[in-house]
Image (cartoon, rainbow, N blue to C red; front, side, top):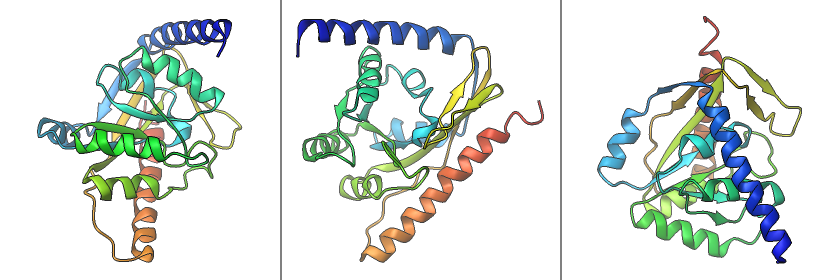
Length: 219
């Protein structure tokens, strides 16, 4: 990696962090359903935060300075996120379902076994949109971590025409972050029962999106 390349990405990370911080500070945040999550963390229980790819716009700012470990794609888009998040105290680990990720998997397992927190995008980085992959559930089973679904929405927003219908939260918006109920890991006897549980959790995440999008309808 050349010096110019490193300087370019470093500057992008610094500028990106400043822009996102100013953007977020212009918004007014409401957080719903965080109590159960906080109780888990007070008991030092390991947690896997799950957010759909299309809802990650606010993630770097919202979870900052908590020492969480996000799984970030090795792509160029992932590099931008990595540069920004590393400046907010995240324990970045690179990998994705479309790349060899033995090292990343072992890193996340170790973090959770030590009572830490991991952030996963269960349909990323290439989709299909809002289709839960089995990785998060298998990681929870192997480590005893709780799955905590989270969604975001806003009073002023735009959905991009991308594979994930990426949500852009506009400046000076009212923003809502909604936590779903923590899902305790279970042992499964066969692939069929694992697939069924994936579908159930997928439905929970989709429902959270719907709740978040409707939150400001009466405003």
